[in-house]
Amino acid sequence: MANHNHFSAVLIVLLLQCIQLSCVVGVSQPTQTGGRWELLLNNTGVVAMHMALTRHNTVVVFDQTSAGPSQYKLRRRFGGERCTSAHADNIDPNCYAHSVEYDISRNEVRALRLSSDAWCSSGSFLSNGTLLQTGGHGSGSRRIRKFRPCKDHHCDWSESHSLLSNDRWYASNLILPEHDRVIVVGGRRAFTYEFVPKMGKGKAFDLPFLHRTFDDREGGNNLYPFLHLSSDGNLFLFANRDSVLFNYRRNKVVKTFPRIPGRGSRNYPSTGSSVILPLDHADRFRKVEVMVCGGSATGAYRAAGRGRFVKGLQSCGRMVITGNTNKWKMEQMPEPRLMHDMLILPTGNILIINGAKTGSAGWGNARNASLRPFLYKPKNKPNRRFSVLKSTKIARMYHSSAIVLTDGRILVAGGNPHRNYTFEHVHYPTELRLQAYHPDYTEPKYDGLRPKNVSIHYAQGDHGIKYGKQFTVRFKLERRRSGVLEFNAYAPPFTTHSISMNQRLLKLKNRNTEIDGNGQWISTVVEAPPSPNVAPAGFYLLTVVNGGIPSVSRWIRFINS
Image (cartoon, rainbow, N blue to C red; front, side, top):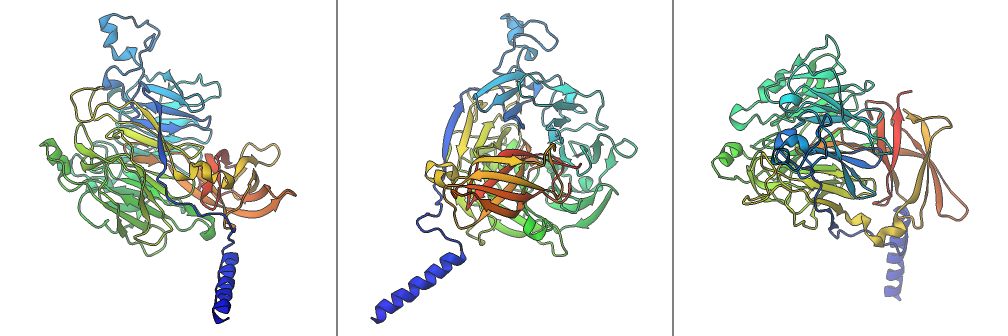
C-alpha cells in the first residue's frame, strides 16, 4: 500500500511538471540523428566562391572572372561575339560563365554575365531584394554591381556608373538602418570605410582600428572583418583578435572590447567565422551577443607557405556587446576548424559546416578537410552545446560556401584552392558538385509536428509590415509540442570566405493566438520588430517553429513606411 501511494505521488508530481511545461503525452522529443546529405548536381559549372539566396527562391552563385575558363561554356562572349570550337575560344575566359543562377525548384542552373572581376568581394541585400555587390580584384576592385532577381528568371547582373572611393578586395559590407545605405569596410591595404550611396563628403574615411589590427607577416589577418549591427544602431567590428563598437555616423569608436583570449587570429587569411546570436523580443531586442569560432594558429599562414600545416583553433568565444559588462566566455568545439561557415538555422541553433582542421586560407594553404558539421545550441548549458552531425564525403575547402534554404535544408557548394580550375594531381581538386544537407528536423518522423500551409497576411493594401505593427500568420498544425510556438524572422546573408554578411535572426512576439473549430488551423497575431536598428528594411524568411520543428519559411518584408 505504501509503495502504491508512493507511485501515485510520483505520478502526480510528474503530471504537474508536464502541465507546467505544457507537455503533450505521446509526442516524443527530437533526438539528434545527425541529418543526411543529398547530391543535387554533379556540375554547377562555376565555383561557389560567393552565394546568396534571392526572394524568388533562386541562388546567385559566382566566382572570379580571372580564374580562366570555368566549366560552363557560353555561346557568345559578353558583348555578343560568338564563341566557337576553335582552340583560342576554348581557352578564352570570356567564352565561359563566371556566375550562374540556381533554380531550387527545378534543380537547374543558368548562366549569368559578370563584366568585372568579383574575386573576393562583398554584398548586401537592399530593401527591394536587390543584391548590391561591391569590390573585387583588378577591374572589379572599385566596382558596384547589382542583381535584381525576377520571377521569370531572365535577370542578369548590371554595373553602376559610380565607383567606390578605394579598392575593396577582401572587404566586408553591411546594410545599415538608413534606407538602402551600405557600409563597406576594409580590404587589402585599405584601412578605411565608405558608404554606398556615398555619405558626407562622398569619400572614404580612415579607420585606425584597421591599421592597428593589420599583421603584415601573416597576410593581414584583419581582412574580411566581422561586422554586426547592434540593436542600438552602432556597429560591432572584429578584426584579427580585437573588437570595437563603432558609431559610423560620428566616425567614432564608442567602446573597446577585451581581446578574445588565446593566440592565433580569426580573420582572413586565418579565417574563422562569426554570428550574431538570435535577438529576442523577450528583452525588447536589447541584449546583443556575438560569437566567434575557429581560425588559424599564430604563424600558420607562413608555415603553410613552407609546406607545414599547423593545427587550427578549436575555441569559440561569446560576448554580450550591449550593457556595461562585456567579457568573452570561451568554450571548445569538438575539433579545430578554419574556413568554415556559421549559419543560423530556423530553430535559432547554429550550424558550423565546411572548412579544414589545419593550415590557413589561401592557395593550397590548408589540409585535413572538416567533413563533419557541428550543431551548436546557444541556450544549452556550457559543455552541452555542441554535437557532431553526419559526415559528408566531399571536402569543402578554400572558396566554398553554404546558405540556408526556405525548406530548412543547407545548400553547400564550391571549393577551389587553386588559381584556375584544377581537377587532377592536387590534394583538393576544384569542386563543382552541389549538395544539400538535411538537418534532423527535416526528417519524415516529424511531419506531424511541422507547421504546414503557412501564410502571412498584411493589412489590406500594404506591401510590407511597418515597424512595431502587427500582422497575422495562419498555419495548420496536427500536433502541438510543449506549448511553445516561435515566430522567427531570418535575414538571408551574402556568403563568401566563411563570412555570412548581414545574417541575423529575430524571435518575434506572439500577441494573440486563435484556434479554429477543428483544432488544427491556427491564426496568430505577430508583432514586427520595433525599428530598423533591430531589423534593417527588406525581405526576411518567417518560420513558425513548433517545439524545435520548423515550418517551410515564407518571405516577409519589413518596411519603413
